[in-house]
Image (cartoon, rainbow, N blue to C red; front, side, top):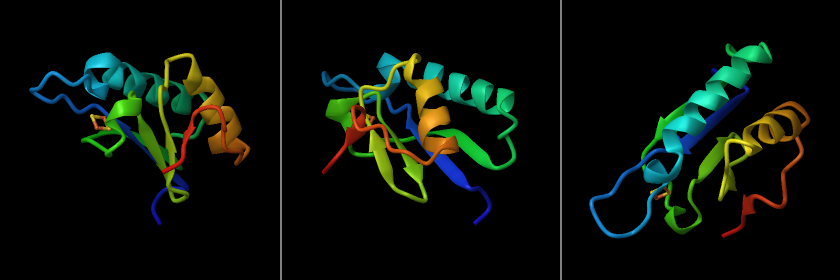
Length: 101
Ligand code: FES
């Protein structure tokens, strides 16, 4: 695998009345993840990128981290630091944000 972790952040915008991740904070989250991963020196080993719908729309803004396949919902800019420090670096799932299907 090319990266130790790969974070897909939904930035989808749908042309309907349902609220979507991209309209709430999707791109801001992508930028903040990239900024903080660079700050932590993780740029080459952990990749954060935007994605289309990850089928967790009602919990948006949503993201998924691989290889674990852990989904997080209702993610805010303030959560980025915790997700990097606790999940990406320490390997601990943030139970208050985790989506269980
Ligand atoms: S619109 Fe973001 S998960 Fe579907």
